[in-house]
Image (cartoon, rainbow, N blue to C red; front, side):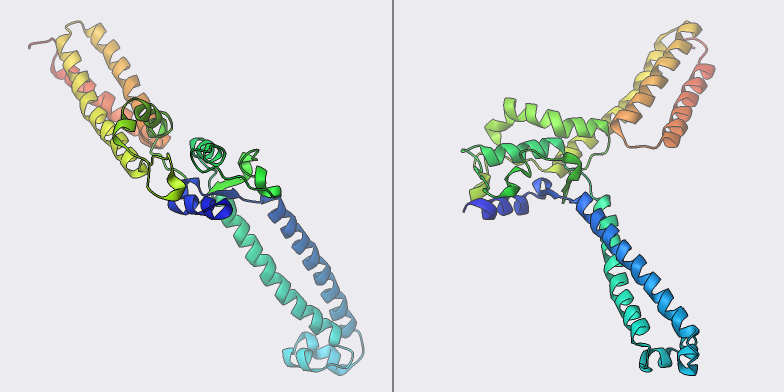
Amino acid sequence: MEGYAKLASLMGGYPEVAILRRFGALNIQNLLYLQAELIHLETELRESSHANQHSGDVHRVTMSKDWFMLAHYHEGNERQWAVALRIREKLKEYGDALLLQKQLCGLETPNAKDLDFLQNWMKRPSMGCVYLLGQDSETWEKPDVEDLVALRPRQADGLFSSWVTDSVVHIYHRILGRHFRKPGCAEYSDNTVYYSQEGILRVASLVTMCVSSLLPIAAISALYSVRSMVIRLAMVAVFTVIFTLCLGILTKARSVDIFTATTAFAAVQAVFISANGTAGQ
């Protein structure tokens, strides 16, 4: 298996590296051409309609109010109905292209690590070693990243999971993973080890849950062990900031949700302080 077939097998097996061109500029240029065509056709339709309206022919005058007459009376009227039919076809083409471009704009750019892997896979003799000969040979080697899309880009639940996906997994594989995970047996997966994105996110989620459980306990324990009210208030401020940072890093929570959760966390600490004036009481 070589060339396009081998590259297609890799992309089919691992949709994260199914990275292709969006052709954003060409799609917009095509829309501009279609729009220009429709504007000209619209003008032509208005002119032919105006000519029929002022022709003095009773049949042609009634065409603006009678579709059957417009479609079937052809003496001097071929132009208006022909233009209307051309507009119908062109509007469908324009609408389809417009909706398609909207969908394309919603596709995400590929993960930088996935693009880097694809580039290395195509170059290295020990991996894919796929060298295309046509003008598309530089699609991935010298890409316009903003014009690339991934069919199934890696998803992350926050900055922490992104960091785990992009960095921790590679460090883990170099230190431990390479001793336990073996390359796939498919022809396109020579010397290629795959880590499931679902598994990575599950590990990141477990870490997030552990932090969410331990942080309130740590805050209450620290406050209980301190007697000075001034130090307690300072610790409340510190733990509240840490809590906010954890929400921002470990989750994809909205600003309003972070604000609400932070207020509740600070309130819990305040209630504890008011109920325990000094440690041991």
